[in-house]
Amino acid sequence: MLRRGLRSEAPAPWSLTAAPPNEQAAYERILPYAEVIYLVMTADGAHSPEEQDAMLGAIRYLTEGELDAHAADHMVARFQRELLRDGIEQRLDDVASRVYRERDDRELALSLAAGVAAADGQLHPSEERTIVGLAERLGFSHSQLRALFADEDAVQPEP
Image (cartoon, rainbow, N blue to C red; front, side, top):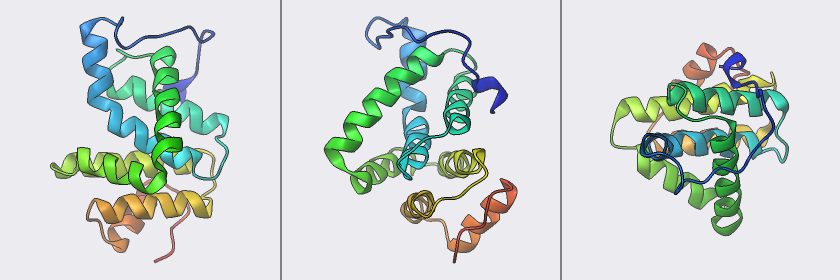
């Protein structure tokens, strides 16, 4: 995921409304997953280059290359506005409500959260709180969450 996320060009403006229909559909389809990544990577107040690369890599992977760094920058700007407006608890509620229906979607969201937390090799307490809050909203137990972190080679969250 990290290697696929490396940026190759300088950011340029990207518009959802001006994007081709296939990019618009890809954007909307992965929006809650990208927001999960954003919420975890910003939980500690700073996002490392590794976390940013992990987010971009995930976006490219989830869209099979349909979206690039420009679309990711657009998403980040959107997520920043929504987080400032709503706060972390409301954003977690919203994301969880959009992926809750299917177990695979819930697992993907939680796996992405664990993956971005592991990207820089450190699990900050605020990142952990964000992931635990998401896991609770998605119906995962603490033992399921610890097992997921073991799969991601990340620091284990506290029970």
